[in-house]
Image 1 (cartoon, rainbow, N blue to C red):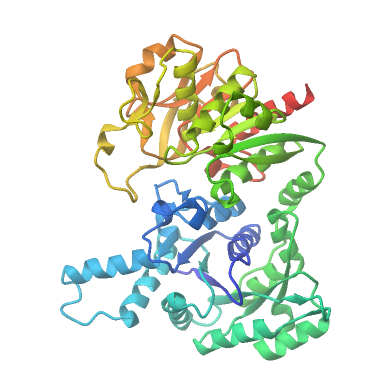
Image 2 (image 1 turned 45 degrees about the vertical axis):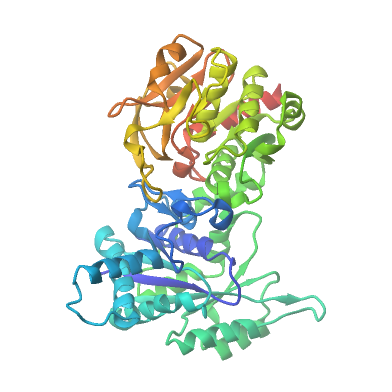
Length: 535
């Protein structure tokens, strides 16, 4: 194992953008021809975010092997275009569960189990596992939380130990903190960053790079003060200003010399990075030639991070078409009848109904699907959004008056969406249909036109499916069943004939979208919406 390690910690306050920083570092090193892998260590005690309320944690990002992970892994994949795995996201819950299971099985031979060395050893093992299983040149590890948090201490100690064992030139610490700007005195203040670095030094870690989140550019005097009191050279103080788009961040950091400094500290060659394609993508984003309005109708819209990958995939679709995508975030519960649907959705050029669980808001989503179908508005249903389209069509076209999902109504006469047999009685937590599965696409369909393939792989996260008992009724109608999982004969895609663009998928295509390579379905959905805008 010859991997180098970069560890990213945060200080002063949370939510400064460690995930974007980690993803940007991955991008800058990959653009230099290095093989990189990002990973995230979260200090909370949940095993994973799969059972957490989206308002608590944002979206759950799903890896190809079925891991329910932190949303920052989505940033990593979108920036580096490297598919990640379950082991790329570790929580304190996973660490402690592994230790306690081993203790109960007698794996510690009767010894006392302690935070040091047992917890820190388990964390170190998981960090090194990524290096062993991926053969990457550089492993980039983001440590969640803020330095000084009690729950983060074992992780901080573990990365300190890794630097000791990895040796000089093989490990770099990047510390991201806030430099607040006080309008009253017109100054950036360095004291909070100094205290944050002092806290880190108290745990035995000297940052190699100080990354400063600030509203204003750093004056020479600020850099000198930080260098003096944080023990770093001037070229190791990196300005990290806010950008209009997160995709400009790596370009800004490269201009600040971050890529060059990292290569120097790690003893790596520093060839000219390949940034032209990314720069062109950012330029298209900043200079759209047209605009289209997309209504995103969901149940967690107050927290946009709950649909982060969907929003980014819509943006990527717009970038492909040189168009600005204006997302209207619509609470499904506010759509109470057909008149309200027309009022709220009337200005939308396209409608997305994304995934979700539970029956809250589903009545409004059904009215949304009906509005899109009857008014020929491009409709894209994702996971729950596909099921909603099926329920609406069964009720209002096929004559199944109380058609529903058994998730929402267990006594419905027409459970057109039903629980899979192998999900009966299964507890929550990593038990959904998770990860990548095959889908065979019917010829002459919107899906085939988009993918230009007949056999695809897409990521899933759900428990309920289209009920095959009703396939005959749908196949005789204009709602076509155009994608199927061949291993289990499960319906994956539905489309509406005679409609400009109406498609629902059981999987989550947003996880496979990239800002410089939009997912085919999002690309074509935005294309159809732009066409409606023109009309």
